[in-house]
Length: 96
Image (cartoon, rainbow, N blue to C red; front, side):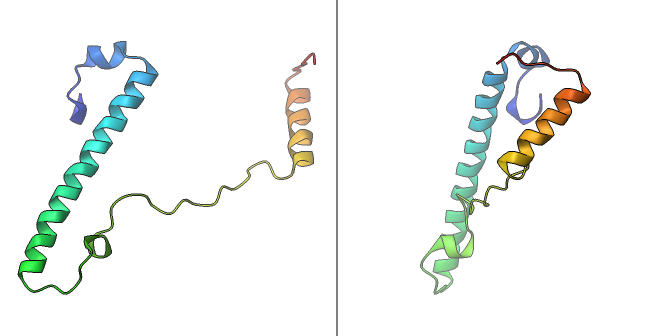
């Protein structure tokens, strides 16, 4: 199936964890391939007289800036009030 090269049976019989790690490996391979292509292009750039010494400045690869985590629920009091409304609307009772 697709770029992973799995059969439909392999995909359907694998666990969610197995699929996750297979996809992680696939994307790691894609990133390594991109680095190889970038380095080959950078070598040609330098041979043609390029002045920049860092391929990362021309073709950035790797960790992107992490976005600040936003809170979906708002404050702790708002979260609790919303959860109570949801539980009341669906008649959910939690014994604590």
